[in-house]
Image (cartoon, rainbow, N blue to C red; front, side, top):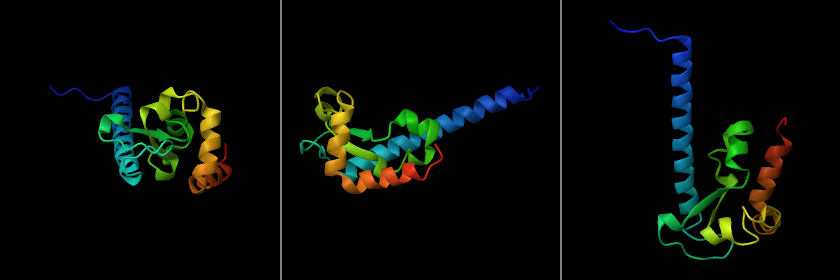
Length: 125
């Protein structure tokens, strides 16, 4: 005898389906960022030879995007390719020195910066 799905079970399945969908979109976004930036760290210029060396980075954090700006999850303008050092380890990296990174981003990636500022200005936050 087939068991009927309860409302909670249906909601749980829907949440799981959405999580899988977001995960797939993020993975596709990462590949697109790597290809767009030609396997090159945009901060230091290092050529990255293996996928493991590539660190696609969301300018507006992935967590914030998931909560507030879902359409930015796969927006190419909300991403940049970095090597491990520029992404996580150096004092001016995206995670160790977010202010320094943001200043660098504003100066060196003006088109992306302007796009994101315009996007945020047009949102009801």
